[in-house]
Picture 1: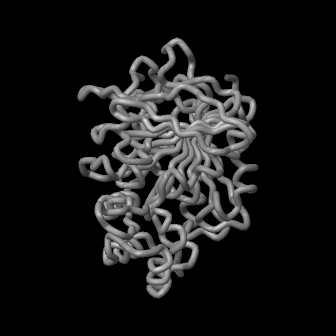
Picture 2 (picture 1 turned 30 degrees about the vertical axis):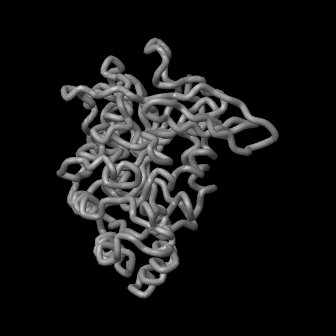
Picture 3 (picture 1 turned 180 degrees about the vertical axis):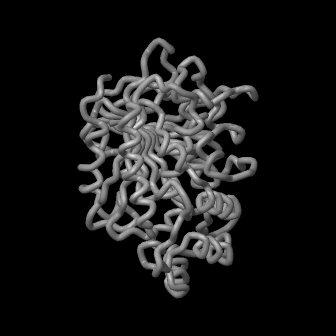
Length: 386
């Protein structure tokens, strides 16, 4: 299995690439003038593979609207510049022999894009993506940090910070990597992002696309009646905390005192990164996200209505909704009935809509019941010709 990331790991590196093989592992830091190879133990010996660089600019007139449908627009981009698109990690199955730097005549392997939710990051999907890659070795899985989140927060995207803007960012990224996704998976906020990707892509699509919207509905967001973990309240609380903190435990204790659940408190501190100021004798933890931008994104999530793409599904698109049994959000009976009605409409035009329920899971479906989620998603990766 091979994992490729464009996120910076050490200073002054612009990007780094991690290669993982069955018997070896190397981390390569891509510097502006030289490349340093740093082996670390993974098994009994090491294997060197040439480093991959991403160092070209994207023109101002670059269009991503056709990303899912027109390979002619795909071009390699500068993913390390702040004017670039998003930080990402590409987890490849053992049988994948492809990179975006290959000749354009080399067809991209089957690819799934996995999109996190609000206040999340690409790491939320890493363990699950590796499991998928092990079971479906001809596939590759693109994990992204959305704007204002994770390593992408450093790029300082221009507002407005909306669902549509986040979707366009991902469309630009897949175009620059010369990828035409076969599967789009989005959790919560990410669910609306993948729906918006389909809405913005030109039609008709050249390949069938399966879309998975995990524990989110296309219309107005409805928090659970007894939910104590409302995202806007969490964002407001985080804004009151210092930008630099001494420990994750201190933040967890504060959040618990404010009434947030233990699971949410432990999850949100994964967005803390250790930093050390020059000349300082001790290090601190600092948030990697842009809370102001994220607050704007969540308001957009609440207001964005994507029912049209569900009730008029483009030919070749199959939209799947997955409801967690113990969902943090309230699934209104009206929404469920509307999804079931869309199932019949889609079947008449060569598309598809389907509703699923993941038992024994709360809102964090890929953490609460990864086995059940894997069984449900597996059908999207079986029988696809490479």
